[in-house]
Amino acid sequence: MTVIAPPELAAGGPARPQPARRRRVGLARFTALLGAALALVLVFHALVPDVAGLGLIVDTALPWLGLVVPLLLVGAFVARSRAAIATVVLAAVVWCLVFVPSVVPLSWTAASATDSQLTVASQNVEAGSGTAADSAAALAATGADVVALQEMDAESREAAGSVLDEVYPHRYGVGTVGVWSVFPIENAQMLDLGLGWKRGLAADLETPSGPVSIYVVHAASARPAASGERDVMLANLGEHLARDENARVVAIGDFNAGSSDRALRDVTAQLTEANQTGGGFGFTWPAVAPVVRLDHVFQRGMEVVSNTTTQVGGGDHLAVVATLNLE
Image (cartoon, rainbow, N blue to C red; front, side, top):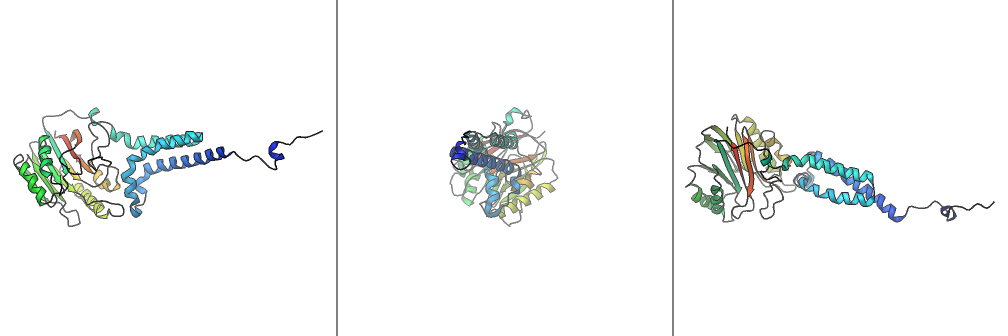
């Protein structure tokens, strides 16, 4: 009897996987690995060591990591791997759980406006831009009860004051920050955030519904491997907020930290930030094409009716405007 050997044996060994199949296996492993890593980073990003600025980069880029999901999904389908597809879908679900609640429009759930409200407007006017007066005029036109400005030098402070002093009878400024208010300002003082810089203030707004603590902040800049001063300022701000005895508190300004930045955790442990009225992330910097939200309105003890960003003046930050119910 003649036995015919299988082709692979006749050729001297078992058949090797086809090159296309090997590539699909490699692609499946690669996409599954990245999908799993993405899910872990989204949940545990605060544990990423801030070596050479890696933590700052990850925290700042976190919302944008969702753009990786479609690319990984395409790779998983090309690889024809159910395991890789499942891993990428898991990463997509994690991204949605982390970010979707914060991008749902506030208008869907916002409290109804009452007769007793506080509207605050804030912008980093970019010293040297020469547009502080334009910003001041535009912010006053929003009907804000309080206007807070940051990154002011002597020239921009004078220009903003020439507009706002006529509308707001109460004002206080120190260093690079200032606040103008239709309500009396009491107990105004430089906010010592531990670095000896005059980049913050604290005061009480005496509203018809009672006092509201206000903090105006211009945090130090943060760059990869150079965010230590900002981190110290925000940590000290958190301590000030924890000691504040007023039931109603608002902290506004340029925090130089994105919403998912771990440096804000001491602040957000005390105060919260409402979603944007129209939804989305509310990015504020750079003004021409915002990719991160550096400017914030944090509060406690009040209901937020609206929270928006707007282009005013010619600075490199968008302005933020929020209306809160005092009662």
